[in-house]
Amino acid sequence: MARARYCVNNNAQPDSNDHEVHRAGCTFWPSNRTELGEHELCQTAVAAAKCIHSDVNGCYFCSRECHTTWISTADKLPSGSGEA
Ligand SMILES: [Zn+2]
Image 1 (spheres, rainbow, N blue to C red):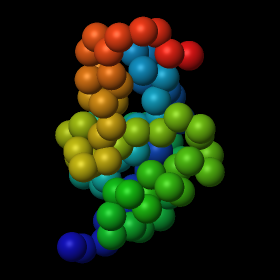
Image 2 (spheres, helix red, strand yellow):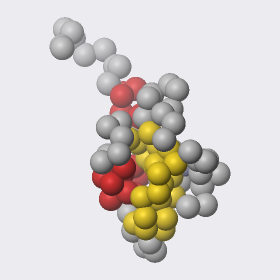
Image 3 (tube, rainbow, N blue to C red):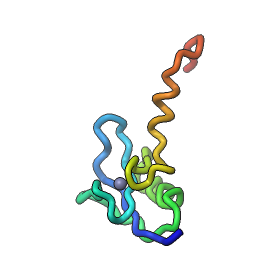
Image 4 (tube, rainbow, N blue to C red):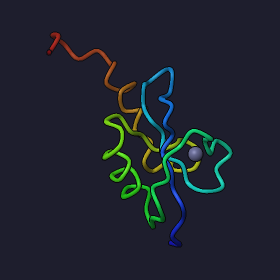
């Protein structure tokens, strides 16, 4: 896999409060961003972004293997007693 430039959006997503990590060429490449340098995998780009923002998520479109917000939707399945 080729290395690519990644950045993190300095604006959090309004729905999830995540700061999305984007790969160069993405349609949603943000203008208000912090460059993360070149990475071979979105996982390492996300790790770098976590040094800047605590809530980080891969972009669904360009870094889908790092997009994790859908997991929180699955967590909403009924699962017995409420757990803090
Ligand atoms: Zn993207």
